[in-house]
Image 1 (tube, rainbow, N blue to C red):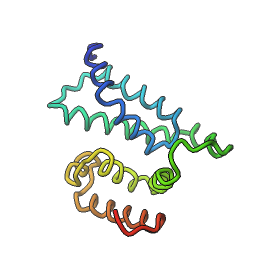
Image 2: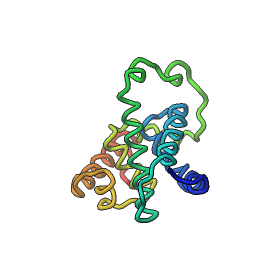
Image 3: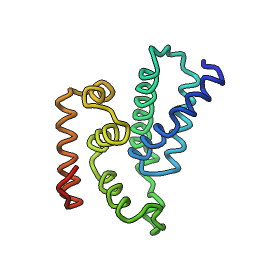
Image 4: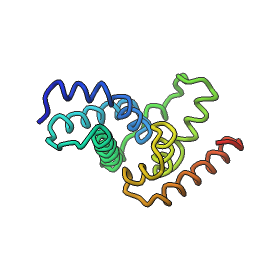
Length: 159
C-alpha cells in the first residue's frame, strides 16, 4: 500500500493522462470518472515497485486500458444507452475540432489507441509496442491505416 503523499503526487502528475485515455476508450464523462477513481485506487493499494517514472506511467496506462476494456465488456454496459444519443447536447468544442475528435473517436479501438498514444501522448512506435504488447511493425501499420481512415472521413491530404 502506498503513502498518501505518493498517491497525491501520482494523481497530480497523471490525472490528465488517465482521463484522456479513458475518454478515448469510453467516450463518456461519467464512465471516465468511475475508471479514474478505480485506477488510482488500484495504484494506492498496489505494492508494485516501479523502476522509474516511465515504468510507473506505463503501468498506469495498462491499468487504465484494462479497466476500460472490462467496463466495455460488462453486462451492464451492453444494456445502456448514452445520454448523448438521446438528446443533442451543445458542442463544447469548435466545429472544426469537434469534427476531428469525432472522426478519431469513430475509429475502431485498436486504431484509436494507436492514434491517442502517438499523437496525444507522444510515444514512438517502439515504445507503443511495449505498452500495447504488439510488434513494432504492427504499430506502424495501425498508424498508417488510422491516418488513411481519417483522411477518407475528413477529406484531407495531410497528417
